[in-house]
Image (cartoon, rainbow, N blue to C red; front, side, top):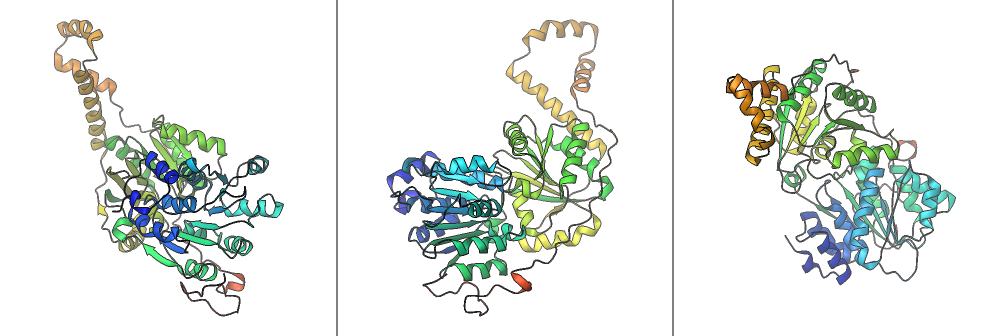
Length: 471
């Protein structure tokens, strides 16, 4: 890998990325940053967790001149969480150039955003719907825009934002740089690139780098009605430090988080219907380890960058291979190992095989753990905690009482009683979850009348090939 010092960056950006702990470039950064620094359009095929924000953020800020207090850069993202995360990272990269990024997203008071826009940010990081709202109100003007970034373009496609993006791109200056980053490059994304980009070069990380090799992947074949009890057994056996459980729907997340709470687990749920304050509160608890289990939908967890997640559980199998890769990418970060476990009902085995084929990774089948194994797991955890206290020597205040007990009872009986008292025994509180039917994606409609987007001359577009001089 190349080092950032080899990229010829200015002192301000070099200092910022050094303070952020960046030393060597990731594969996608090594490929794209030199081209982006030249002002050329490009497409980067990169998964979450591969450093793509810095891949476009560093050249975006390095090339920016602050001659006027106008919006010079714009990043479009699919979700508010990703918008907030990207804006935070861009502000870190731009701190010594005094370049400021502002997140713009739905769910936040628009008057508050209008007030923040009056402070003249240089970059906006926006979700498409809220950006269009500001454009209609003329509270955001993009006439001075020099660089546009489309981040997680395939997810914006899946969420139905493709026409909004086309509308936005028609309104920004033609003489601009456009950078597109996406985990996958389906045909509609190729057509979007052909229509709005100038001869973009495609850069892609290898599939093995996309699937993240330091994540152990396994699945359990479980009937729908048994999934919750099996999940509880796994939590008891594995005792994850921080775990994310993915559910297919908002209803599933609500029911699952409530059920786990009833069974005695430290858990909260997060999905798109929660207020921003509530979402922020839940994420703060999870990051601080106040709760060890987060239950989330795909959309709510998109773009979350949380260090220390040890386990990911797919309570419901993802709707597509790309979602699977995004989910399991929440763990196994910063060189640490992670475990991703997927629950599969018998009729979903075909979907699992599709995920294996696309990710080029065999997912190991594991037997369903028994109640006895769950009990032994909790006993082992309790014993380990006792040993830790012994090794720390943090028990002297209780030594006299222990010696007194030993004069009355046999030592093995005393230790056994302590283990029984401290061990979390499996909870059989009755739980009933609403059964979720397997997700069946609908066919997308691209453009009006179900036709493919066409260029200004009315001809059908060909991916990745466009003449310089117009957009």
